[in-house]
Image 1 (cartoon, rainbow over the protein chains, first blue to last red):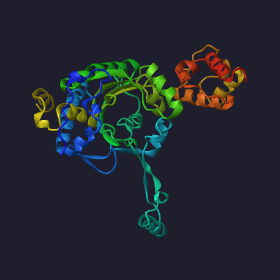
Image 2: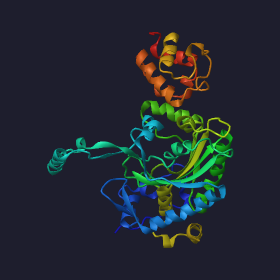
Image 3: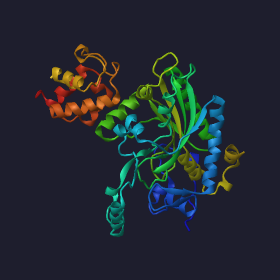
Length: 325
Length: 81
């Protein structure tokens, strides 16, 4: 049994300061501790874990906070399954920007002879992927991706724009030992569609609320300009463009051993990127702009377990009250 | 070289306006060039002029106007093109 590592206190949060674990390389990692204390269960693949009941209760508590704001804002709740039509991913541009993260679902569509070959390959431990064919379905990379074509199909937006409250498991192919970088994770997302002014006002509102929510949970945090992990050398240019235009902000919370703080919320202004792509128009016929705030639910839960310990019964009363009061 | 750059932009439709009418100092992003189009332009320039944009040049300014692109390519080719 691992000795419990003391949680980071908010006073430890000097910029670039290393966590206590970083100073002792042989100490158990945060991930080891989460496994040992039963918060997460390993599957054998990095970034793919079981979650305990306590972990889920933390996420449910946090989602109630989000939901309170979303309801007051009049957001329409929509939940898509964690997959979307392959043609929509192809059209979305995701494979131009993030080919390394995308996941496509393949299945067996062969005949009896192919089935025999599949079984032979499995028996002999050979590669069997040549007996798999792409399906019409890919894994959702961000909760809002299935939304845009669905909204565009309804016709022009109402005058006041439209606001949605989404949640989805998302997939990104980036296996990692950092518990905050899971391959399957849940994203709660509020998305605003409308004029440039409407959607930027929405983002401003969440840029104020986000840090308040996180601080109310006894977590240290800071906002910073950010960029998406665009692929390749061209991606560096895309990333700098995005930063120069301040299109993405992240709310960062220290979570991992000796690593940079983790983006737990992100605040994105897409300009008319999705509007142009999907033919989303406003009531006056102009192209719609969009913005979203995304909550990395596992990351927020992990930040709480990191800072307050792996036993939620011992968390500060004020934090428990915010989550479950 | 300037004509070749215009042709690269025009043939790939990287800016949604007639390429021969773009002023050398006009902001290509304002004319509708997307971020991804600027990546395609960068790759096309590298292939056409046998150059590689160093990291310091991978920014919005390098590809913002025809004049800026011209200067960057001239610097990297050292007058070869």
